[in-house]
Length: 84
Image 1 (tube, rainbow, N blue to C red):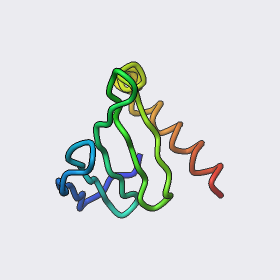
Image 2 (cartoon, rainbow, N blue to C red):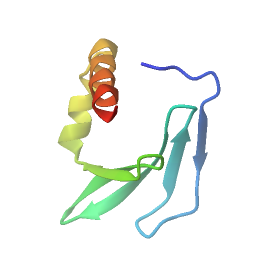
Image 3 (cartoon, rainbow, N blue to C red):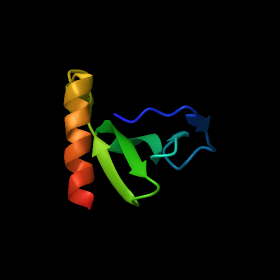
């Protein structure tokens, strides 16, 4: 997994569903925010560079926490190979 020597984080102005959190380094720039989805909440992850968005529910987020760094690196390799 690429590491950055100069990660950037900042809170931005509140969106319609609440405040956003921006995380960026030389490899990616994303915005996170909590959004209402039906009777529940999800985390919206938006890639600024790819202009893509995904909504993750608590079960998906919990599953991510179970991945090892090696598993995450393999996922990143698959994704970047498919983008080429």
